[in-house]
Length: 261
Image (cartoon, rainbow, N blue to C red):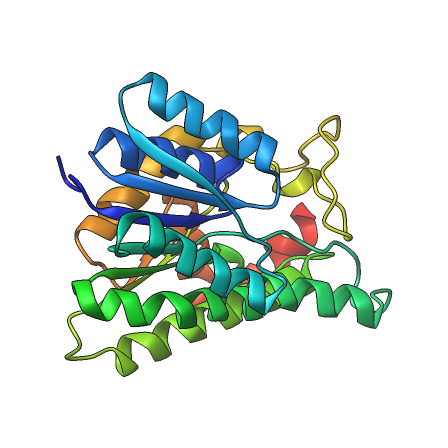
């Protein structure tokens, strides 16, 4: 097993990519510290892992609050003695044209996707240094390929990419790796969360269904990238194409985004 007896801390583990990462790491022998705000959903994830013979525990964590992140990291270590892998996965997307967004919406977007992610790394790294562990940041293809109505989200993911690049430099020679994951379209609840961070299960996902990757498949690919200690890792196939176009044919990228909405 790739992560046998390793302690893996995952934020935003109550649904979507985080949930499936928890299940995937458990299948690979890890002791999964699943954290999020929705404890009822976390307990379901933990019960599913236990039902399959795996090891997991649920921890409350609100990544918009500094003290909550630190307390969660400390609680994981108190239970299992260490952290071998920390995955800063929690995030959501503010929607709206830039000229219509209020300051509070920008603050909420950056507090969760940028500051919360950076502080997750801050509080995990002292423990990861002791285990020559792995720090993982979950970004998005949107870091390069912007679109209408998701400017705040794209900006936050561009910041995640920059944080990942910086950590790879700052951690050089420490034994700790940093992997920044940039997914394309993956099935999740992200488009069902409003600008206040509230989930609406009945919302229809507007993303192209034909390009959508199953979350379980995405989790396996991410796990392998983490195992191999990759640096900046972009997937899916359409995600890699999008990044290539955005880098080398930016005018075409803008035309595609404007037409596709």
